[in-house]
Amino acid sequence: MNCWRHRDRVAVGVCTACGKGLCSEACGHDDGAIGLHCDEACAAHLRRRGARGDAPVGVVWSMLLVALGLALLYYGWHQTEWSLSVPNLLGMLFLWYGVVLLLQRFAQRRAPSP
Ligand SMILES: [Zn+2]
Ligand SMILES: [Zn+2]
Image (cartoon, rainbow, N blue to C red; front, side, top):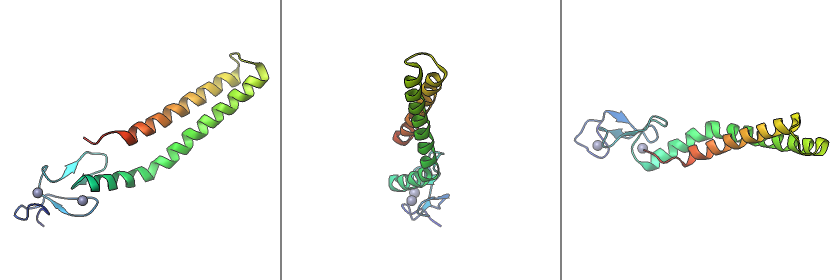
């Protein structure tokens, strides 16, 4: 197979998304996370496909942590007023961890491709 862009060059790789032949670093891009691809359209396709696999679980999990944290804070607030009681501390911990997970998730999605 020859490169899809340079018909006279032998392809050394194949785009993971569309299967086109790619001749070298000039035509094939590989940023590690999503595999070899020919252009930005295929890179976006691969990123979407990769994100579908683990993103929903991560988001649901961090949402659950935030909800649990809020519930514990609400419970702690009504039981003991504002003090460093166990429900308050646990609530803050869950809330903090959930928010950190969510922020990490958004940071990953917004990360520019190299
Ligand atoms: Zn492609
Ligand atoms: Zn080429």
